[in-house]
Picture 1 (tube, rainbow, N blue to C red):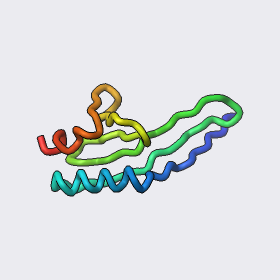
Picture 2 (cartoon, rainbow, N blue to C red):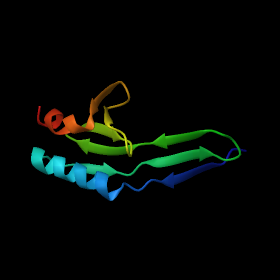
Picture 3 (cartoon, rainbow, N blue to C red):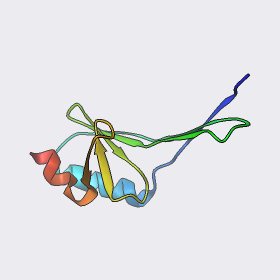
Length: 89
């Protein structure tokens, strides 16, 4: 039988501060969900669920220490520095 273990990833204070500042400058309301590490015990199968920033019915997937943000899945991405302009437009 497979045992699945889930550990919650805490967002770093630096990343949280950056996101809050961008959303404040863009004048938008947001919600933030911490990511998870999901692993199947006794195997080498691991999935890292990113942090999810929700703004205006869009999900922005954010990984710690990554310069890219994925929008509504992994098909479209933007640079973290361009997030404010993307939200405003």
